[in-house]
Amino acid sequence: HLNDGGQEWEKLLSLDGPAREIVRTGTEVRYYYPDAKIVRVEPRTIRNVFPSLSAEQIRNLAQYYDFKRIGGERVSGRTADIVVFEPKDGLRYGHKFWSDTATNLLLKARLVNEKGDVVEEFAFTDVSINPTIDKDMLKPTWASVPADWKVKQGGPGEVVPNDTGWSVGKVPAGFHKITEGYRKLAGKPNPVAQIVYSDGLVAISIFIEPFTVTQTQIGLTQAGGLAQYTTRSDAFLVTVLGEAPPATVRQIAQSVSRR
Image (cartoon, rainbow, N blue to C red; front, side, top):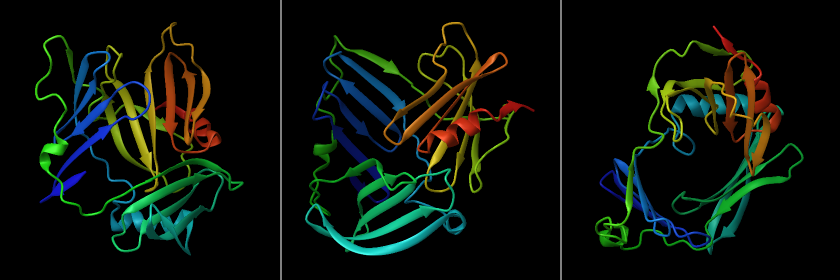
């Protein structure tokens, strides 16, 4: 990852499972799948979420989370400060963050449920801060797309702002609507309505689309800290997705209705 004069570049390599390479620049993201001989090109979207928050978002967090520092530890060979966000209700997860004492770089993050059990965690195992990075290291392995590969343009893309005609009746206190409109999703022939809420730490997305007989996945699914709840609202399918407890996404999904 390189930030040079406000311009960012990033290259990610998958070390397990099928080979995959992701190269991000200021305007686009390229996903390389050498086993399948596919490269997918999408516009890059950036959301203002933790730890990049506005002053207003920071003030709002204090209303719904208890914040405290609990000392320090070593992470990836570096001294880290620890802070905890404990929710004041049962509708969101707790968060624990380890940040590098010298640079404030986030080194480790953990989601915990109301019992204190770990729901999800990620961390650096090895980190080098402010090394000399050659920009050639950030270039794709393939200087040009091989002739026998397929190039797939586009992808989910950004939300095109618009009034969708839908409302959400039971959003947890502290979550504010940050986006509403229509978005093109992979595998969907038409744009899907999307409404996004955030409390500053996490975002919850609501998708609404016409129901078809091929859509049979109704109910709750969960992978780590990410919960998804899908239900029908008359002739439409409502899906709520976010890093929140199952009860929260279920409550939101069941409160979506036409205005």
